[in-house]
Length: 468
Image (cartoon, rainbow, N blue to C red):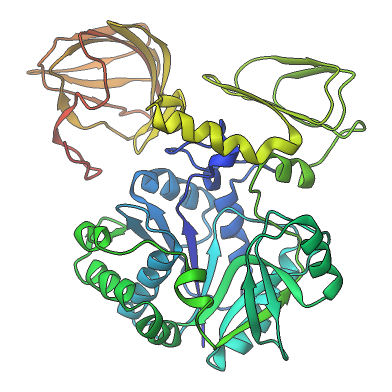
């Protein structure tokens, strides 16, 4: 049976705020090395012999950036991007991917389910573990990858192995004393969230243990739509689907689960401390990124994204700076970052949702300054790309080209603007911006008006399928 890789690329990774945001989640970040965690996962599965084109399940709002990162690698001439209109945890995502694979006539495949945001230090050992899992899955088992623990970790769930490789039980995150007993026992493994399922067996067991999820996701696939290279699950069906993890929905109920020992340098990068533990350190135990100056600092993680960060006399502390937020916390409180994110979300603050730089299918924009009645942005348009044909009810716009060439539709006019040339877009005027050149177009946009929100856009034509 061939391997069908399925990468689960939803989620936001709130414990890595302020770097990770709702619109720029953990799996799309480059935390170690030049590649994002998603790209590192894709490189890893490219090592699997005779694997089918990957299926990537991603949130609706992350689709263009995900596609860009996949194509940047140039590893897969074919792949499938499945869009979740809303997040419902891992069980619906896995069920939907399995049903989609069956729709693609891959019902005899072994589904290899992989989170997109894990770090695996030894890819060759990963390939070996997948081969052993494939042997078990071919026999009709539901296989989970159990990570051989190297210390008593209280932040992970555990898998208890019974006779042979049969799963005896799944155990919630333990206290330290219990975790120490688990490690000493030798039959307890960290729950990695990586699985290998025969597609037909998975769907049969979901029919028994989670029929409501199978029913709703069956409707979501049946009523799904193709949007270019994307396949979008039907929103109405997914709204009716109960949220649940694959552990709770299936793995803790089935009698057909087995565990494969996996020792390949796994880390789920679930906190800043976890990143500090696996990242390369200087002679004082510090993990440094960006423009950072230190004096008498030890065992700290200090990351600068936008400006100089200077630190004196710190111990066991994390400092993460972005253009619009700074996080400072003791290293042993890194899990509590989620509490800050919850407060930001409840208050409706933009710092939960996005960075000052926002990525779009045509390029990106960066907010340079914002006040009550005016806003200044730097807009970058990729070569050959263009924005939607649109108008605004509440704002005027002034555009000044910094580099490249801009083709502008401004009402009835169509003009070319080059470096240091400008145009004015009156309120209510239909307009469009395009980069006809071979280098990125950069311009400065000054917005003036009574309301400057991104939802003040009426689109008339958009080649990326966005509505509104």
